[in-house]
Image (cartoon, rainbow, N blue to C red; front, side, top):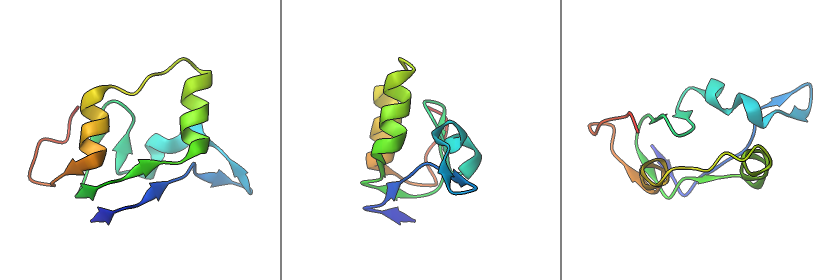
Length: 76
């Protein structure tokens, strides 16, 4: 369960790599949210990266980060 967590970009050799967020295994941006989440936030590094690429987070994905139970559908 993730409660009041902030998810930051994965680091490779000490360098943030926000494009690798889908490799974390529990969040696929705008596609799926796995496990239990309550008030999960994305770090500014991830938000800035997606904004710079013109990628907007859809409402269903945002809602699932706010509150999602593992027994609910995982696909956005």
